[in-house]
Length: 416
Image 1 (cartoon, rainbow, N blue to C red):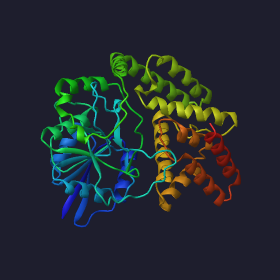
Image 2 (spheres, rainbow, N blue to C red):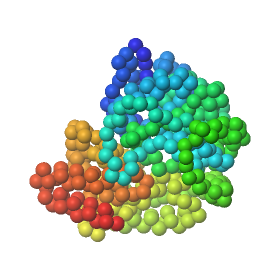
Image 3 (cartoon, helix red, strand yellow):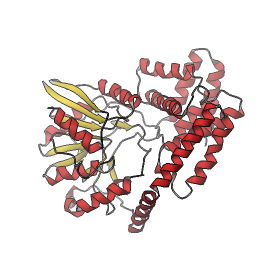
Image 4 (tube, helix red, strand yellow):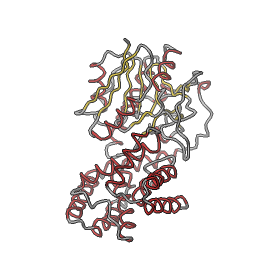
């Protein structure tokens, strides 16, 4: 039997378990078996991937983040068809760029592909009949499939940034093609793809620039897709300065994070709703010189605070009532988030029923769910659908009050 191996570095059992559930739903091509290798103690992404790569004899390896959910059940069939269409294709990503800018930051360039549905898109399985691909310079590391084992540069990238761009260029350096498939519909969802941690990003960006000549890997003009490339040199320089500022102030940023988490722990322990809400101004004061995206957990905290304000105003049980510390709060938030994803992305009745029962058991308010759905970082494609389906569940269980609340809150957030 031929083998396909999924490889992930993980530090979150909740996310990894959900990731594996989506893998287990995939259609497996005839003559193939699937294995999953998880690395729980990776020193870096490159080190963990190298360890797993050497541990598997699978021809096809799929390296993915623990928060990457494959929603197209034909994914493996499509992947193999692409590899078999051209023996020089050694790497497939879902998003990539044909114009890596001088600052080496992939998202500062026009990108091809999808890692999240567009607003109000329906999600359906897509079987690729005709091979349609774009050759790119580099792909995003949320999910990367390979047909050739080429070592990841753990000697250079000893963290969790720039390993993907580096590996793309290592494949191209050996004469192989790196491609992104044309996707009529999104094949994968990077569950918290907009939640980023930039604390060490600039360090590895500079290591990348010192070790790779970007111009060496440029595509021939006939391979380029037509884009309106508009990111100016001034904008690139401005972004470089922002990254450097974060790097230079890293210790202070970390100290502030620790202070905020300790502060929240004390407020949760005393069920001090007003005290928890007050940390919003503290966050703004302490991070006034950096974007809040320097660490994604800050955005989650602000999301919870916004919900608490509404819950407190209507004398409602709050999202922090049944947790004892910040760790439990993060876990509760994570579980709710992935269960809302299930409602949005799947039609599996058992999966969605589990989500509804969790919301009901914990008496999670319509405001908390709406704040999460409509926040910029969560990137839900069909927010109204999720609110409507939860409301429909309560209507079917004769909880008219909850049904009306979800309907009214949904209308409020759709109108803002």
